[in-house]
Amino acid sequence: AIQLTQSPSSLSASVGDSVTITCRASQGISGALAWYQQKPGKAPKLLIYDASSLESGVPSRFSGSGSGTDFTLTISSLQPEDFASYHCLQFNSYPWTFGQGTKVEIK
Amino acid sequence: EVQLLESGGGLVQPGESLRLSCAAAGFTFSSYSMTWVRQAPGMGLEWVSAISGDSAYIYYADSVRGRFTISRDNSKNTLYLQMNSLRVEDTAIYYCAKRTAAVPGAVDYWGQGTLVTVSS
Image (cartoon, rainbow over all chains, first blue to last red; front, top):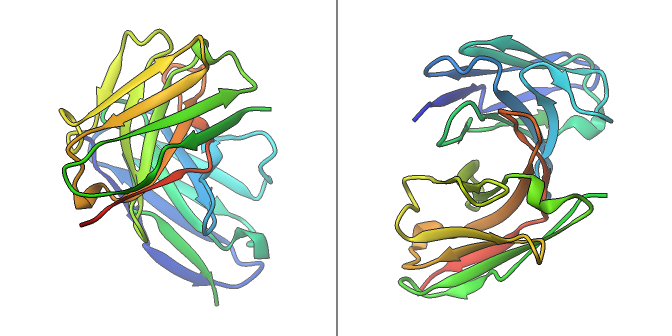
């Protein structure tokens, strides 16, 4: 199974900061990676699909990049509503795998 | 508007069974692959199982293969997860999710989840 290593597991940042979360796959997955945001008690919400495509309705401060084994999610100017957990998912092959998650907290 | 509504969760003892359902609305259910994802308390997301629109292709995580069975009834727009021989480590919120039409495609819509607690 393809392993996804997501880092950091948590980070503290201030409103207006730019933050970057990385996800590394144990083998190449082309661009078959998605990013999700999850708030406490809620289901995940799709932010980015195919590594860099912004889901409709998602603010443009969210961006994704990468291909092959290394991927990043960047939030360019953190807003109060962005404090949440973020998860990457590889859907290149079964079994699908998620990263361990990153909790973005207020500094 | 896409809607996914899970039901069937609850408290069971180790070794018992439970069947989860996911009622879908707002899209042509039979045209989309569906998947189950779970999240143990305070933990990350874990993919559990997936099924193609015509049920021809079915996949399981190693952790549930042989104990869980995914199925769907396209006439009822409903996805199922039959869970047998439940273990304490199966305790989690179980989400059903719709896959996009793209190949390959991620999941774009999620239900609100149903809690399964396995405890003696």
